[in-house]
Image: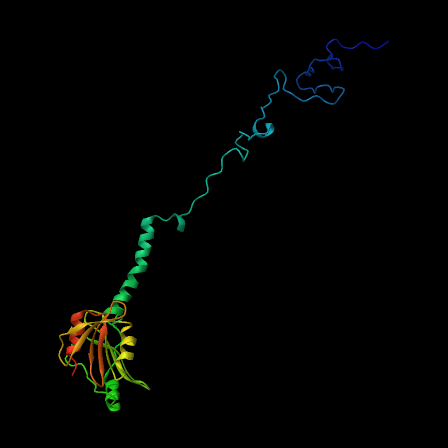
Length: 248
C-alpha cells in the first residue's frame, strides 16, 4: 500500500492527453518534461508571442529594418564625363583651341609674309642669255613692284636655247615670258600645247599674233627671223598685254 500524499500536491505526471497542449506548471516551477523532451518555458497565464517571419524566411526580401537587403541601394553617383558635355561646353573648348592658332596664322601672314611667294632675281639668267648671244634678248622694263618674278632660267640645247621668266601678276595670276631660237614649228606646239592662232594683236615692237594655249591660258606670239617671243599665262588679257608692251 502506497503512503498517502497531500491533497494540494500537483501530480508529477503532467503529460496531457493526446491532441491537447501541455499544461504549464505553477508559477515559479518548471514545466514537467514530456516524453520527447522538456517543454518550452512561457510566462504564467500569457500565451507565447511569436513574431511573424516575413521576407527572407518566405523566399522574399525581408521587411525588418535590421536586414541589410531591406533598403534599396542609393543610386551610384554619376560623374560628368567627356561624352556628356553639352554642345555649349564643346564649342567653348574648340574656341579656346582655335584662338591661339588664328593668332599664329595672323602673325605668320602679317609679319613674316607667310603667303607671299618666293621671288628670284632674273638678272643672272638674262645676263647668261645675253652672253651666249644665241638670239636678241629683251627684258621687261617699267613693271611695278606688284609684278613678282618667281622663276628665271636660261637653257641651251642642241636644237636651240631658251630663256624663261615667270611672273606672278598683281591679280595673283601666272604669266611667263619665253624667248627662244628653237624653230617655231617645234617651239609653239611645246609651249602652247596645241594652241591655234586667232589673228593679229595690236602690240608694239613687231607683228604679234594672238593664240589660244593650254587649259584656260592665252598667249601673244611675236615671230622674228632668229627669235620667237611668247607671252603666255592664265592672267587676264590686259596683264599679258602689259607684259608684252614692257619688253625692251
